[in-house]
Amino acid sequence: MHKWKAIAAAAAMILAPAAAQAQAPRPTGLILGSMEQAVAVPVTKVKNFSIIVDLSERTLYALSGDDVIRSWPVAVGLEGYDTPAGAYRISHMIWNPRWVPPRSAWARDRKPEPPGAISNPMGRVKMFFREPDLYIHGTYLPSSLGNARSHGCIRMRNIDAVELARIVMIHGGSDRPADWYQQAVTVADTSREVRLETPVRLRIRA
Image 1 (cartoon, rainbow, N blue to C red):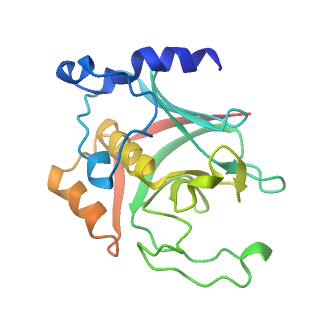
Image 2 (cartoon, rainbow, N blue to C red; image 1 turned 30 degrees about the vertical axis):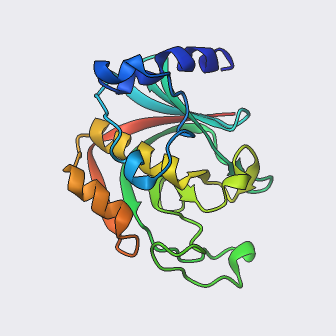
């Protein structure tokens, strides 16, 4: 999997139009400065789009066939709440989700959190890969990235999660107009549910 990082640097701009390829490659989302930018970056559909999460590298890769086109740092499940390896499909996501504490000991004293709240551990978007409890989601705790800190889910920076969610929607046949995305990121207290016409493949590797 380490070889993919070198490939990603060269292939990062495949998702963008030719005019954007003259810029420096952007293998990760760390250069983006705002949510508005994250949902406005030009995206061109690629063939055989899929996602791989490498648990040991704490990295999420977007692929076209076997070629890495983007990568982002993530946090994964801590010991006892390990993120399960396997093959999944993303077909359902919620922008600006509310959070209801699960029936687990670690969440016993936690209270529900509304959409957009800084204390909402789901961040700005969640993409289900094993319903009802496991998803790729944003986080307001970017310091957790690169570590095993979640309770089984995959965490991304909020800005990276919304960028990925839009890419997934485009490749899943459920794109929306530009103003839909802009409203989704500017009106944080309103949830928006999306079901993909074509589920996107996700593989999680140990």
